[in-house]
Image (spheres, rainbow, N blue to C red):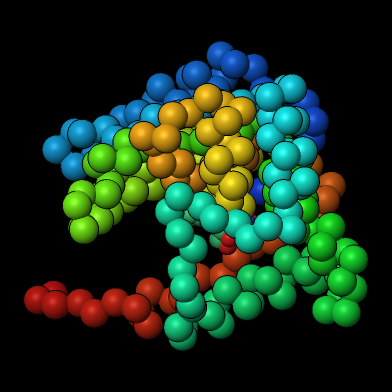
Length: 226
Ligand SMILES: Cc1cc2nc3c(=O)[nH]c(=O)nc-3n(C[C@H](O)[C@H](O)[C@H](O)COP(=O)(O)O)c2cc1C
């Protein structure tokens, strides 16, 4: 698939079919994704790939913990100044509209939140983690390994549609990192950055029609010397 077409096709998938994803397919995707660039080729990323009973155990533990405040290793933003808050609200509105969930419908809103914690029922998850010592350096933060994880994550998400797969990057998937550390036996010396839910999209679910907006290039770029 052409790079342009690959980029056009990728979008976040929020409803998956239960069909399992062959390990060989995931391996192929991830081996190619490792071609991502990183600071001085440090390749700070490590992966835990879960499916079947292990992933079900994670889903259930996350749902059981849903009343607790999420506390991901890489913290949530403390706030969303403009214009980011508006963009985030637009997305939320679009999601709830497509799912037919009204503002007043607290029950369905809660159900949708739990669907997020259940990785939208994706049959597989790829957790990306890094070494704590490379990120927390004395009083300073070295954010570059996180940036590098974003690059490898994007490669995974761009490659997936070639295999008929869909993905969504999810902070919700790493909101309770101690649960992941315990089930996946990841040591305390690691920080879990992001989860990617991956599986075959359920195209019959209207949520997968969502086509998120982008700011026009002209409003966010200045050109010099042309
Ligand atoms: C770091 C990161 C974390 C995200 N976490 C979530 C999440 O927890 N739940 C969710 O529904 N979408 C999540 N998303 C998906 C974004 O909402 C999505 O990428 C954005 O709305 C743009 O839509 P698109 O991916 O379809 O182009 C996340 C995306 C990124 C890059």
